[in-house]
Length: 196
Image (tube, rainbow, N blue to C red; front, side):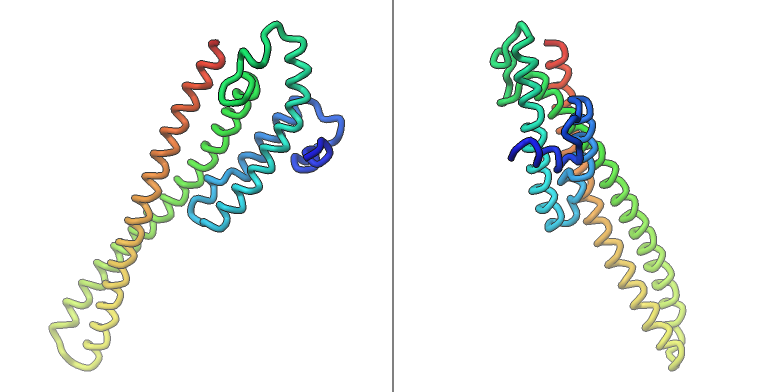
């Protein structure tokens, strides 16, 4: 990938400053981060590919700036290297990952709230359907039997909705916990970089 392709991916002009490059990368990383699409495997795979292109574009644009800074700096990039990035590049990478994690956590929390609402609705259908089925089941006439059948179906649908929503909530809770743990590790690493 050359510089012009990298600028195009980030939506920048050829005279973009390092601060503009960093800001564009962060904004685009928040939009494209694969964790935002945790509920849809196909979208997550596409986002992963686009995120890789974004990271490559960012690397292309920052390596030239990094090499210029490395020449001016008294410390060499190799003495600050960790995981293949210079200290500043790693710091930017961690900040971008933290931004992506924050965006993903917001989206997953919103999904969890939606499933909680579904669970509440399911409990309501289960309760109302069950009560109607009990009331109508005591009078075995044609109309009451039809109402009883509908009420039973509503109760069963409510139970299925409650179980499905609960499973989804549990999955989202696990993913949120994983993101929280990753966020804590990255925050600790960022503190180490800034101190050292």
